[in-house]
Every structure is written in structure tokens, then in C-alpha cells.
Length: 244
Image 1 (cartoon, one colour):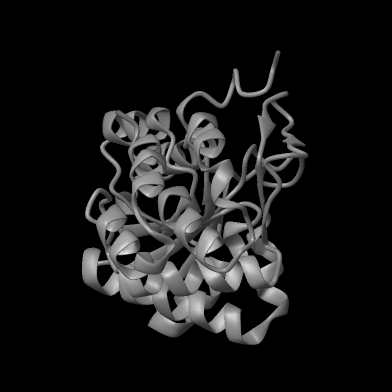
Image 2 (cartoon, rainbow, N blue to C red):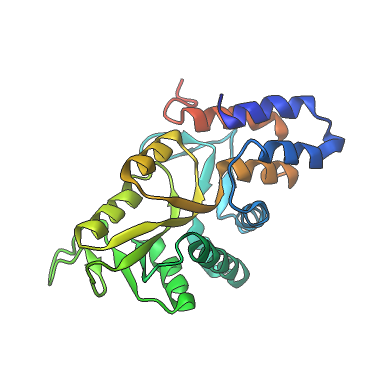
């Protein structure tokens, strides 16, 4: 059963006066690198409206999917406190999970500024991967110095299905890089993304995801607890959510 469906059913059985117990029980159902980081990043992204939740007035994605959530992590760049928090935690993720990194690669376009900040902090070379080759000059797919055999970590701001992120990893491998893995600010946690990363043999480490966002949104009253079941259903099958 989907974690969020389990969560919404559990939540109905737990008193509002036991909020700490509730949050503890929920997180036991989830895989998380760092609970405090996930909570802090979720709080900050909600606070600056980089993430918006509107289950009653859903957004429409380019794919045509209806969505209760809209995420634009680029807004974090305009808030120094949030920008530094994200940079520091992504650096920690790389140092812990990919300590042999020799270069940082951003995914165009939103992964470029995050990747450059991280590379500067780690004093590592920085490159970025285009979504398609430049249409003039050298027609590069990868901008920066290409060093075959170099160990690289990919930086992304948001992971949905993983398609564009993993294409960047494929392009780096095709150019001769050794892709150690990927770090990202936020993931929707779709099953298809999990499967795609598994099939591509790319390890993904995120600071926060949909599972960890919702408890914070409820706790800080950005959403009503009565909407949890609908929010869980969206993550389970986003292509069919509110399409009737």
C-alpha cells in the first residue's frame, strides 16, 4: 500500500494532541537520509512559496496532469538563507554518499546555479549538461571541460519521473564520465522515478520529497488534514487524479 495512504489512515486514528507521536510514526514508514534536514528544507520551501499546495484548485502541468503541488526551487536562489541551507545540505550529501567526486555536473537549466554553488564550495570543476546540443558553434551537449574517466556527481533541483535527469547522466556517460550518482533538492517520489533510477543504475539522494513535505505542511497549517487522502491518491496515480 502507498505510504501516504497508510499515513492518511493512521492520521485519522491519532489524536491531534499527539502530533509528535504522529510524525514519529509516519517517518518510520519512510526512507530518509536526514529527518531534520528534510523538515527544515520543507519548511523553508513552503515559507518562500517555492512549493505551493492547492489540492482544491490544482495546477495543470505541461503533460496535462492535474497536480495539487507546484514546485519552483529556483525561487530559493533569491533568498540567501534558503540558498545557503540548500547548498550546505547538498554538499553534505555529496561528501557522505559520493566522497570520490572529482567534478560536479548541473542539469540545465535549474541545476546549473545549484551545481555551480556546490562546485565552488567543494573546490571542484563544474560542467553542465544541455537538454539538447547547442545549435551553433561547437554544438556542445556538455559545457565545460570534458575529461573522460572523471568521476562526476549530477546536480538537479527537482525530480519528477527522472526522464530529463537520467538523460543528462546518459549524456555524461556517453562522453566518458563516470557518474557516481545524483543529488537533488526535491522529488515527488513517483514509483516510475524509483524504477527509472534503478534501471539506469544511478543512485539518487534528495534533501526532501513529497512524503516528507506533507507532514510539515499539515503541521504548519498550509493544508488541511482532511485533504491527505486526496493528496496520497495523486502521488499514487497522477495521470488520472481529478481527470473525471
